[in-house]
Image (tube, rainbow, N blue to C red; front, side, top):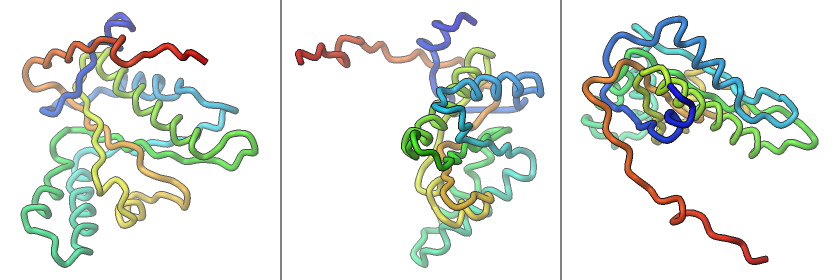
Length: 185
């Protein structure tokens, strides 16, 4: 797929089924992610892949985090348990900032976000379905500990990947002029 077509036609795909991306497709996903803008080549990101039975374990981790609130609704617990089963593969994008005198933490977190975006674009370019999800559990300390995040690391995205179920929706047509203004100084 042409790069500009991929960039202008990508949509989130929430209905994902087997098969998961192949080993070759995954390799391209990560190659694209590793080309994210990266001031000082700090590589301030890392990734976890979650598939098979590990998806159920992630759901159990989500439930454990929610149960810390004694008022957690049973429906919310059920939804959290099932959430990782919505796709055959999840990639967790983690910002892993490094100490650097010229590259602030915020820039490194943005770089990890660019890596997540590149994963999405590479998935679309290969005909895969993908959606970036976060939600409150992405930022929950129990989930961070359960995923093995070090101090200072944070989840940027849960990228759900698989084969699109059905046709892709058409992206909304947005006018660039609605988002760009000249600066007059």
